[in-house]
Amino acid sequence: MTRIVLVMHEPLGSSFAECAEHVLGHKANLTVFDVAPDCEPEAQVRRLAGMLQHTPGQATLVLCDIFGATPFNIAKRAIKLATEQGFSAHLITGTNLCMVLKALTEQQDNPEQLSKNVQLGALRGIVNADNECKC
Image 1 (cartoon, rainbow, N blue to C red):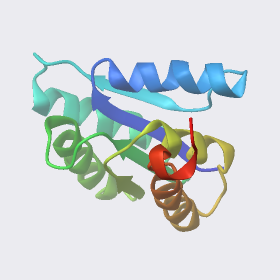
Image 2 (cartoon, one colour):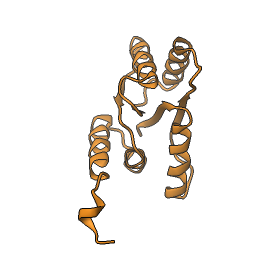
Image 3 (cartoon, rainbow, N blue to C red):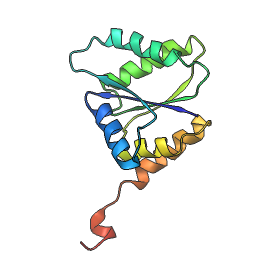
Image 4 (cartoon, one colour):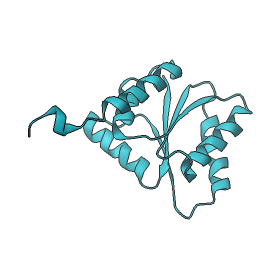
């Protein structure tokens, strides 16, 4: 099963995990790596790389909130470090709750397919409610 890791601005990752548990009705099977505003990025890169390497044979999907922001840069560099040790992961940004729920409900061994499904889940979750229902 693909491991899901949330690397986001603090407290967004923890909040997504709590919300997923609320919606799913059970503890979410994911790892949260919240990035504090006053963190030392290089130390966080090493810490995350170490966490990723704990399960080298397991496929991993890393979800970040904003492309180009500090959590993304930490994740990208940590994955690069871990890759040098034989680890591989997929990295997706722009994460919303629909993506987290899709990743958790479709966890599978094929990280490429899971990445595609998560991206499609994000797009399907964006609905102009004015056009879809008459409230």
